[in-house]
Image (tube, rainbow, N blue to C red; front, side):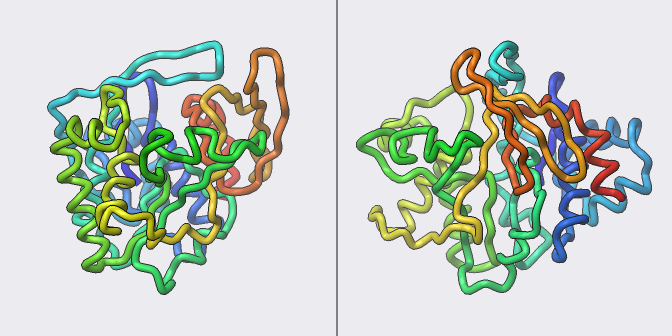
Length: 287
């Protein structure tokens, strides 16, 4: 996991929560954290050293160097939004940074509540990620036309969770992602997506896969064992976390509330909502 705090979001505490959930639910649970000195210093100021050392087997200090100084809008339910720096650029170097021969790169807010990710290890594939998303309201591929950049563009793959082995193919995909990042505006025009002011790992990943497939839709990249990502949108609110279960209210339309109990791996895009229940998550995962 990559975790860099900004002035509004405590990403490294989210990574701690997720690392502890990984330790509790997964058999293959070595966790490498990529962060900077400032974020780790903050975590050490609010967390016992013993718990940090238990959660993270390896800590890799790798500063984010990004001349774009990207800023994006975040939502905390439908009723609050704020802007801050988006420091996720060095995930594109995961192939070179990882200390492992087999790696799963996870968003810190894709929380591991079950054991399904254990199924990736020693599989026949050397690179896997998902195309399909499902919201708590059971809406599929709700982020675009059939999960594409646009109606006339290529399939969209999600960088939320990526499995890869050290292989020529995996290395080629990450090298292409880095090349695309350096020429991001050009690829925005070529693949018909509107640059949003910051680099999107999902877009670069999708283009790299398309290029390695000779610009055809071969579907050579297989999905992870659970072939979709369960998503709680940033408009949703977490109301409780008890005994490994999230209770989340979705509000896809103003005033239309639905309460969900979630016991499977879930990408909670409302990051502040996770942090409101940080202590409950840590207590459960460390019990």
